[in-house]
Image 1 (cartoon, helix red, strand yellow):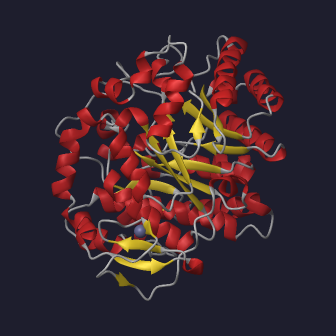
Image 2: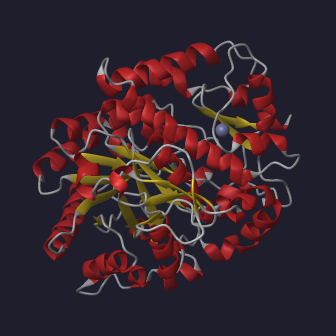
Length: 473
Ligand SMILES: [Zn+2]
């Protein structure tokens, strides 16, 4: 049975780097296949007013997700409720709402502002949205226009991904910087330059980022103090280069041992505690993953994520956990400010690269996120889950079209996933009266675990992480 095999994730290998030259064919295919999703972009531009009459949010059409100060002529205002105003960058980092980062990957990038706008409209009073674009993945103009359209995002982060240079520390695929990536991110080849850190900052400024990142080279667990010192030295240099009104986050890239081993973890946390010049942390953790879209169930790693989040909350630091998917959502319980996810499996976690036999010519897996299970399953397993007692049909804007059509729309399934995770993030805020965010996450996880335990699922579809999470809460 195909379900029992380890998932070869062919598409995730392809877009591990989000390198657009390797993706061209795939994207073209999706354009044709996702005529259903594309129809949404062709729809008429509709707007809703923003609170206090300070502008309008486009909720449909090609400009969906963008905010305009005046209504374009001939456009319509829908009867729907108004959207909240966008909070400032600084308020989003210290405010009481969780930050939900949407990563722009190589897949379905054109659709992202649309779901971000939808989420802001419906859930923007409970979450703050951020946008992350990777500098080595596309031309600057393209990333800049993504930021412009996704104007509901209070945070705009242009990730320099300098960790791609650290093949010896991380488990990266062969040639982790593709041909085009060198061109898109020229600073990747000039690390010896005296003004290298400035080049990294300039690249982020150039596309319109409003939260700058330090280079974020990977920390080697085999030479812990040396690599911590080097990372903080670069970060201090970046801090000295930050201009008036700019905000800089300490960007760290860690193999999971830094969090799962107690000795390394303590060393890291001590260093973070000491260096209080950095009040925003952007930390990416690489861990091994057995199956695409499966969150981590490693108890030691979960403990590390918990400790790191606790420390940041206690010390008033804002902790952002990019590229963590639903594992990042779990960290909200322990004090993380926000987390990020995108469309592909590679954006649900920064997984260690492992060579897998490709399945050329095989279809891309049809995946569906089950909100009640806090898990992504194969679309065939969805049919089983759906007919189970107590199942609640998803009420997002994308599911009716997704299930009405004969051809599976990967774009609509992805938008459904991003929307549902945004809803779950909002729920953590909305349900925090009893026991704070911790209480809210614990209740959602406990309910999901209870409900899922009775489902007739194949072994590869069981949400195994829930038991480990329940323990860690
Ligand atoms: Zn849905």
